Length: 88
Image (cartoon, rainbow, N blue to C red; front, side):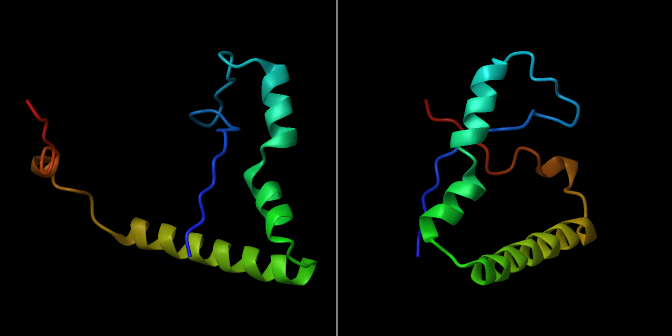
């Protein structure tokens, strides 16, 4: 299964980003109309129980991915340019 989701970035680039570069009315409108979670929920027409199950599974996957990343090692500095190339 493949699910293509087009959305907008509704938060700043970092914690505390005041987003002074974005129009506040546009951001409010986007939050009301382009919220990806709400739109997905409406599109798949899941019951409350099914949505809670899906949401719980998604959170579990994300939590496991974060734990895996935190348990990993930092990349080697000399690997920074590996697999980086340009044509012509």
